[in-house]
Image 1 (cartoon, rainbow, N blue to C red):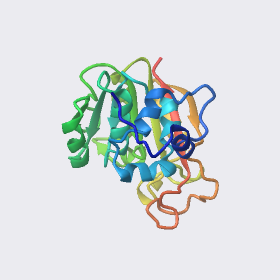
Image 2: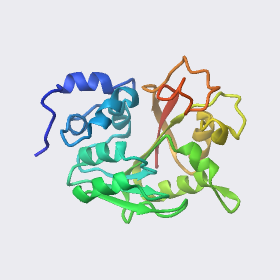
Image 3: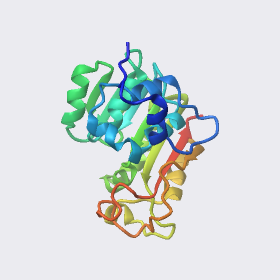
Length: 244
């Protein structure tokens, strides 16, 4: 049985965590239960208003029993949410290029999470998955080269292989200006939305919509995402692709 936080109503929490997404992208009970779970660290809950997880998970179709490959889980904010939503009948394959102690600690208590250290181009899961998920990482994938190929192209191919037909590839990242040079991925840690769409479609995916939950028109795209003046408030895109 899922445990929920008695101090927060689902309605109040979802108001803080939601944002505009495609029409018809429902915040289902599995997402609501994950957001209100008492298993979540207080630090994660405090970030919900900033990260709008309900909108992103709804756009991707996260649900109970889902199998999800998460690319570059970092500190595990989304690993914890995704695994709670998927529940014991689902699975999260947390794929990282480096050790992730916080994710490994969570996995020790949640057997529906498997942590793997991979490099660009490696398989993401031992079985086909419903969703491939990555947040605020695609620009870093562009900065990694394997031979003459950038890491993003290799991860896109791996995501396509990993997904079931009809599966979803969810990408969230910090937006760059439309006329930004290619090296903005390393200088400001941003990337152009149009670049991501072009590259992911080239890997065989169909663009299937977006959420504006993390859009911020006050961000003029000139600052590095770690600058205190904009950190946590960057203009971000959230894109949904589907494997035909």
